[in-house]
Structures are given as C-alpha cells and as structure tokens.
Length: 204
Ligand SMILES: [Ca+2]
Ligand SMILES: [Ca+2]
Image (cartoon, rainbow, N blue to C red):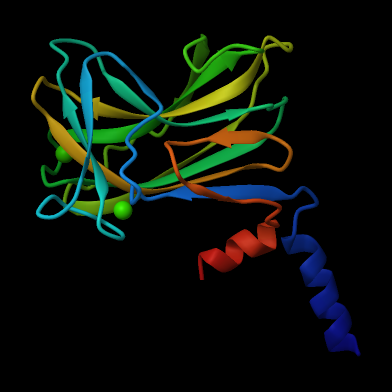
C-alpha cells in the first residue's frame, strides 16, 4: 500500500496539468515549407541526398548574398502569455565548426495577422551543431503576447552563412498547447489531445 501511494505521489509530480498536442512532419508527402524570408531555395529530396527518417527530407540552398535567409516550417496560433512551444528537428551538414550550418529560430506574428505579419523575434537556439552528419536540435519558446498584440509563433530554419551553402533537415516535431493551432507544411498528421505522458511515451 505504501508503495502504491508513493507511485501515485510520484505520478502527480511528473504529469503537468496542461495537456499538449504534438505534430510531426518528415517531408514524406512531398511538401516543402510554409513560406520563406530572404533568398533561399527549399526542395523536397530523397536518396542519394541525406534522409533521416523515411525516404524524403528537405534540402535548403542559401541564395543570399548577405543576411540570414530562413524557411518557415511551422506556425502556431492562438497562443497566450506563458504558453510553451517546443520544436525538435534533425539537421545535417558535414562541416564541423564551419559553414554551412543551420539552426532553428522563432518569430512572433500579430493578432489576426498572417504568417508574414512579423511582430518581433522570439529567439532560438545558439548552437550550430556538431556538423558531423545528423543531429537533433531543440528549442522551447515561452510565449510573450506583448500585452495582447501578438498570438502567433513561427518556427524557422536559418542557414549560415554564405551564398551557395546547403543543409538538409528532417523529422520535425512541434509540441504546442491544446486549444491552439499548429500549421505545418502540407499533409502532416497532427496527434490531437495528447497528454504530456503520452508525448513522453513517444520518446522511449
Ligand atoms: Ca523524412
Ligand atoms: Ca557546419
């Protein structure tokens, strides 16, 4: 009985109250991106290009003479202050400590706006990865509505740093609050009403 109580108590601490949903996308249906900013070409590819899961991945070719171009791979709307959104994505380059490389970045969109209605940077991860093939990078954003002016978060992949640089990405996962909406490139299958426990089970 004591053991059972202990299990119940531990259970209370590891399962947060709020439910979250998860959506995954591995470019298997031939989709590419939601939109882009700056000069960058996104192409759905298969072998002999690197593929992490399944048979397709996304190839990104930096065409910008200056600045950091980016592709939008997810857009979550209906967010309020303090909501958490996590993105996990696999990325591929074979140039350690040198470009080409990529990382994920977030941006806000204004209330009632489109994916293009930029309302400020939400930051992102600072590491460019080991550059030794595939690695999974992750970032969690805590939403800031700027006193109700914004309700959307875009998730972007940025390439660094030169014209002609190229990387691949695959197997995107976005974890977002129940009751908000996640847009991803076409054809993905959202898993609604997942609990945090259910999501943890996916990682075992
Ligand atoms: Ca894939
Ligand atoms: Ca690199």
